[in-house]
Length: 498
Image 1 (cartoon, helix red, strand yellow):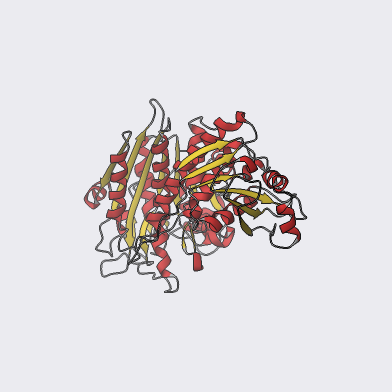
Image 2: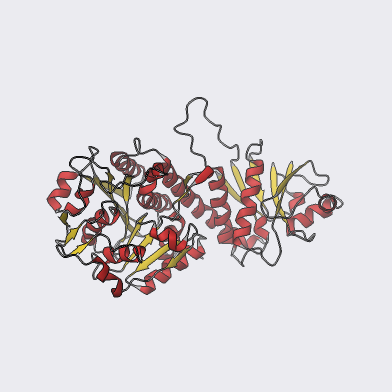
């Protein structure tokens, strides 16, 4: 995809399609007003006749508008002026792309960037635009037979700017967004694959392939013998009931010298049946998404490597299946983690924390500046925050605030949840150092408390993505979150944000 900027007015711009917006109560956006003047009030007349709607989610494509050089004008609804912001900006753009994606338009120019969306800068408007368009054009058809769906014809995307002084920031935003969108697409592809294809071995091969594509990236893969030698008995207890071998993937990107790395740890349960504590059958197919934490950190690494950021980033992915079987771990079993602490497994469906605790202990050897794990850890988080925000827990409030701020800037929003000593008594065990679950009350918080036991002395945060990593229903599929949030955090660390 090629990106460019233009300071031309909408009516004078030659293009296959330009996108303009209109507000409710007859108010025209900046570019729509210019089109209206050039066409002797064509848009105003269509609004009055009821042929164009300003409601969010509505878009009308006009062809061969008099006085306008573009072949098509996509007029998309922006809603009320007072309520227009980034969310409406992205919704309007999604609607316009959906309306023109099957046309023969090869290049488009987005004039919505001239509207004031929460006072977002040209840099962020370009980022939101590219990410939104890429996500709308994304489709997953790899497993379908027969004739493959043709790729969208759109090859060039232009961003309208108010002045030429905005060109550099807009171009930078588009370049950053393109890498982030590629990382999101990789994340979505991995998560959308079925568990019989996307196994721990498949994830490992994907990480190795990325390393071959980028000079500053190295990937090592540890097998079960290696993990046993390291004392990762907590992780290995989860994979005990399956024939598919577990893997520990370690990716190291070195973009600078003399800097402690940021370490991202992603939960990689490629299928979670619950083990002996078997899940209900309804929607169990969605448990292929239990590796979205792994997919998101691999996707983030792909974005960082593509941008060649001057940061050091290490990604650690513990990956395995959780299945019942004659050799599976049972409720009541006690295992010793890599840290030496013992864990009573009261529920084998609380397996994510069992693989993450060993991965967190392993990650300490890199002396991380920041240690962040990403996981679809528990449905209790969905009860707390729904499907809109990623939950953040941290042993460092300043780190939590930075992550939340990064999510806000990237429009990949999150919310800080408490992490407090009073919840830890729920993890007490009569037979081991502690149990792997703490009961129903505050389930998301006690899960975070469990992980915190392995992060003493390290600035650590936990991202709960069970509610945001995928969508259910007729639009079922992975979202690619929180790749934008993590990328924003690393762009900030690299000092590349305007």
